[in-house]
Length: 372
Ligand code: SF4
Image 1 (tube, rainbow, N blue to C red):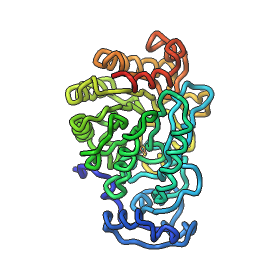
Image 2: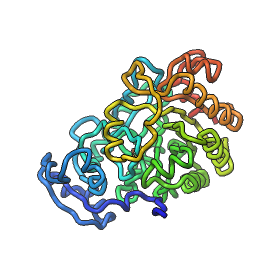
Image 3: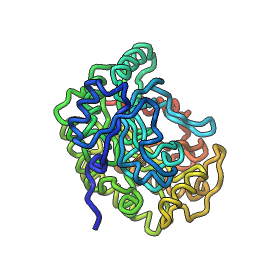
């Protein structure tokens, strides 16, 4: 029986620090909390951090964290594609890599460094946020940290969520989404979040959560953590992504949805996204080399307009219909259920409407944020 993971940061074994970050107060705070062996390295001399070749060294690399400086922008637009409907999301780049190890994780193919990294020059991050929030003239900036990492995976040692939640608590034009598969939410307790943070969990069928999401929290623990956040006054979101076809998938997803609504009051859910498994061809190569027994790619896929492999459209529609109907029956009208990177045709077949009829996905999500 494997370990019951709640906090994946305990998987870390060592910390590296770029020498220019060594004296920052935030760096000291993190190394105090982590209580792990520390090595200082020259700036950008990263070759020595984890030996071996990528991606074989990724398994070991997930135990090493580099504290470093981000010289570029922290806040970016989500890299949607022209061919599919995207949702106008923004990303805060806090670092990259994740101590969990999902077989389907796209980061395995997007990144080429085996170790995790975390940016410690957070004064620059908050200065940029202040500037960008002041210049923002839309209804609500939806922004999240869970794109190149998991939002809460290192939070026990970084404590970044506390700073972000309190920052967004003072903003009237922004809403922060913290997206995770961990169950570590202790830092979110007792914060003045002012309703401006949405805590989100990725959910999946039991067999996928158990067998393909290594070191992620068991589903029950994710939902227990979600319930804690409800009790602390937070709104929530959920992501069924990637939805995967495997024996018994229909009843497994139904069970998860039943459990979700048994634990979480529907009126607290702002949005739920649905996304069927999709991947760039190099991901399959990397994932099957690292996880030779993985079966999730043993299916027929087509190459779609953005170069990603997807299930056939008829199957995607079947999958989405099952989950959408189950969710729509249980959700409040104002909860936005949306598809991540799907076409208008899929939207129409599954829901009976296209996003443009409701102002587009971006406006639908903005409405879900502002609806009380
Ligand atoms: S939790 Fe997210 S970021 Fe971490 S390995 Fe899984 S898919 Fe990747």
